[in-house]
Image (cartoon, rainbow, N blue to C red):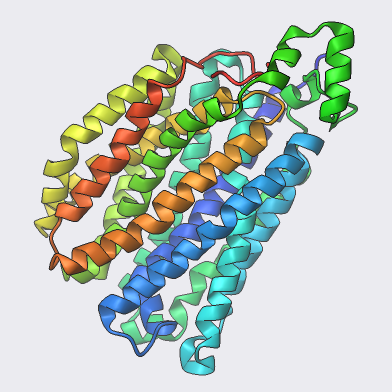
Length: 451
């Protein structure tokens, strides 16, 4: 029998995905801003200012090492026992680690043990977060009506935006009202400890969330648990299920290549603009710390229009075409926007950052959160989406800011390395679109990959 879901169930699923993704990106944005503003003085003392920033960014990258492992482990579990049970665990791990960062003693108190504990909590945080946004995207895609998946699943991208905005707003207030001594002494702890409020609310919402109807109705699922490969093959042969038999013989790597390219480009741009650029503005351009936090806040507000608009256009014109349009626009705008940022004049800096961030990060995020689940078949959708997302992010977002930070330092503050890296990342999604078919509106109960 078809799984019965009410509008209220869809709303709850959307709220769950939005909250979890908001908390995930709040966690990571809290850390990235802290890394650029205070962590170099709290956990990496005794180093030169430039080297301390690189060390703080390297610890930021540590969280990405655990994410593919978490995506693989929890993704496989989610494909076997359902999405809701796994999403309950991941948010508890992720949010709990973030709260504990706010309780850490600094290097001034316990020496080298402080950065070690910070790195360990980043690993736990990454392990839980690895399956969070992919699970939220899968859940919303599997709940939403086929013709409106783009705009509904874009709520996941709005979650990333809300998290970024919330973290940036908190840091903006702290920087504005506290002295540097107060910020370093105790003010930096407030946003990490305060994230526990969102964590508790998100856990409560997910406790009442019903399972994805696509998962429950899939041919390989019986009584809420996926069959083994041998059981699926036996059942498919008995029922002459051609789609399932084809899925069992399909080359899984063909779908992973375009999915990786789509994610790699967006994640790389995100790492450069949302993580490294704050340090570039405050350290390299020697501007006020409030400028870096304020520009992220304003751009995140603009993205509340960008994300649903691009999601709706993806429903109307298809995912491939919108990816191609946004990637080409981004490539054209890289040089003028980065030059505007590097000019260190506040109005031009704001304009350049807002345009580049919305075109090359938030627009692609709106498309990505739905396109990746649509590429993969129902049997391994959660695991495949999660692993591809996190491996690409580990390479692009984890390494990108560190490489560019060192490159910019070696080039005496030149903006050219940033523009080159942005162009390299932006070309990847464009290439990926030529390796995949249009996936908008496909049957998500289909066990076969789209490629």
